[in-house]
Every structure is written in structure tokens, then in C-alpha cells.
Image (cartoon, rainbow, N blue to C red; front, side, top):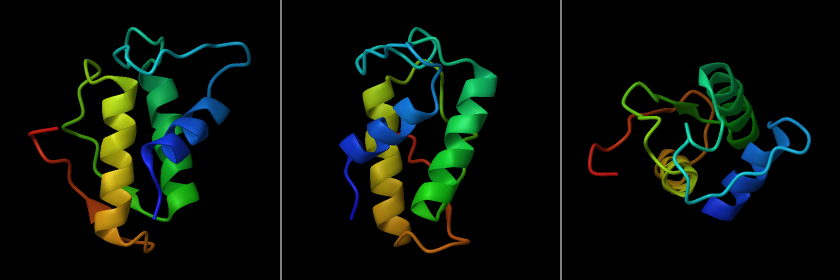
Length: 91
């Protein structure tokens, strides 16, 4: 079982050196552009052995909200390779 802190740590490994992220900022305000986001998602999928369907994720979602969604998604999927997780719209 992973928690959102594990996800935040994984996200930080994918950011540019020296890039500081306030987890309460939106993904966009944290400076995470679409290319960064794709790289982060690919890294998270590899690290946690899950396929995330992020089509409904908004760049207005905070880093913390996104991390909690990923942690919850991995737990729901059991972290097994090939599982596809669709975000709940209430997140």
C-alpha cells in the first residue's frame, strides 16, 4: 500500500533540479507543464505498476490532490501491471 507522500516523493524525482513544489499549488502553478506531467505519469506508472487514465485530470488540481488520487488509484488497482484506473470525477 502506498500513500500520497510516496507519490509526492516520486513526483519530485522527476522535476528539474532545484524546482521547488508547494503541494498545495495547482499542477500548473507548481510549474508542471504538459511535458512534465506526461513524464511524471509515465514514471508513476512504472514505479507503482499501474496504468493511470489521466484524461480527466485538470491542471487546476493541486499537487496534493493529484498525489492522493494516484495513491488511491494504485491501491484500488492493486498495483498490478496492466490495470487501468479511471479518475473519479469527485476528486
